[in-house]
Image (tube, rainbow, N blue to C red; front, side, top):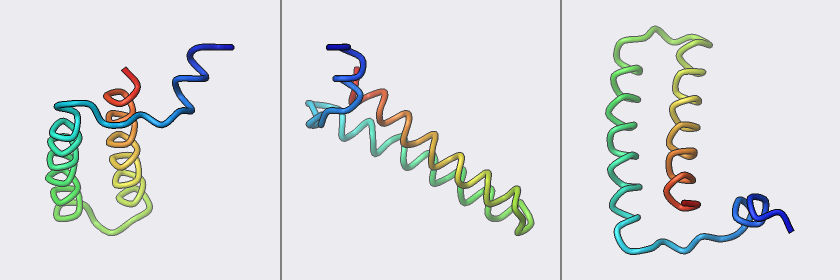
Length: 67
């Protein structure tokens, strides 16, 4: 089996220290989300900025979980 596929599609139980990393990333992203919300006019671009920020958090957390 392809190890990368196996790793990417399995459950990764949090290891010691990981939950704190997830929290730190989410908190910083939330700060940026509020800044974007305050500074940017309501628009498609603003929505995309928030969506992509959410994706960044998800991928950062996946990086921690998978590696």
